[in-house]
Length: 129
Image (cartoon, rainbow, N blue to C red; front, side, top):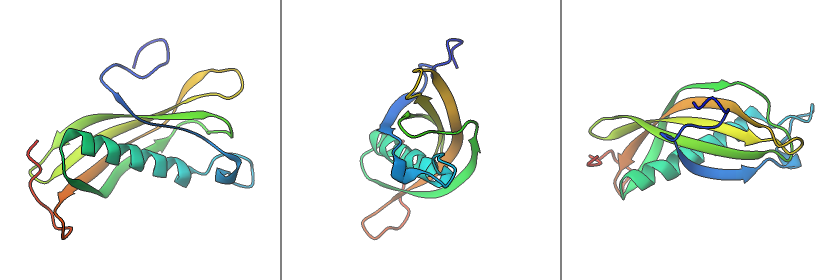
């Protein structure tokens, strides 16, 4: 990561959205499950950009929630290809927010997502990367 507290240039922006009140827990923080869902969507978009064809999530090797996300925060998910297999790809997903109040940019989560290329019958196929 760059020292100015922003994602590095080796990561590609895959998704940007805003955290809304409907996505909160009783304490007013955004649910971790909502954030993980956004990361999974970003990874799916990134997988599709790497190769035409269908991909499906098969695993999340790890996910770390670093800081809370609040209502109004602009949430951005950045992806980087880590590893390719004959049918699978592993991506790092970093999630950053631009805070609604104060406009600070902070990393809030990261994780490694594994996707597999699938055919029309949803069977694994070689992806050609």
